[in-house]
Amino acid sequence: MNNSVKNAEERALICKKDGKPMYFVEETEKMSNGQRRSVFYYKCPICGYRVEVEQIVINVSNDSIIVKRRIRKK
Ligand SMILES: [Zn+2]
Image: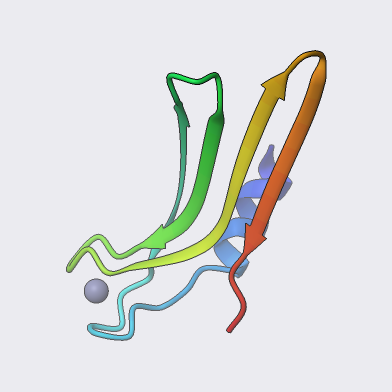
């Protein structure tokens, strides 16, 4: 737990607009078709500027699980 927090701080991004440290956000939503979508991004607390890091879509159907993962490249 402590290690993951430390790592998150080390990887923290700085907002391009106002130079403030951005915080890490994880959002998971359950869609009506049984899909689950997770989005990971950094957000600036001052201006709301957002940098998406990763998106994961999980499909569960007929005992099979399909994971689609999209990582942002600079
Ligand atoms: Zn900002």
